Length: 170
Image: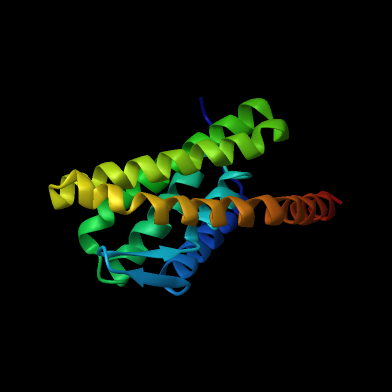
């Protein structure tokens, strides 16, 4: 299936990638378990709400993974790319298929993907299930903050995009 990607789609994808990167890289609190709490998930979910699945993968997955590299966690690049990318793709697919009525459940499923994905990645990278499990509460808190950000911001962004599209067709 061929999809036309507009200039606005490209700009939103780049903006999403940049905001995910900044919220992940600069709005973070390091923890004692070789990681950090950040607000990037809110922007992963937010941009997945209105970008196509492929563009959502780029904004969420690549934006987050590049923040890991820039922040000294390069060994998390591939797990982060896949985890955040999958989170964004699933949310985008659900919202595109079923509409706004599934937005919050889609965000919650995205949060489950993130928490589970990092548990598995940390278990593999650290070789210890208990070390990986110790990060679950923090990832749940990070996910909850991300869901809250997306729930509040999405209607505002949707209105702004609708106005922008209406003015560009005149």
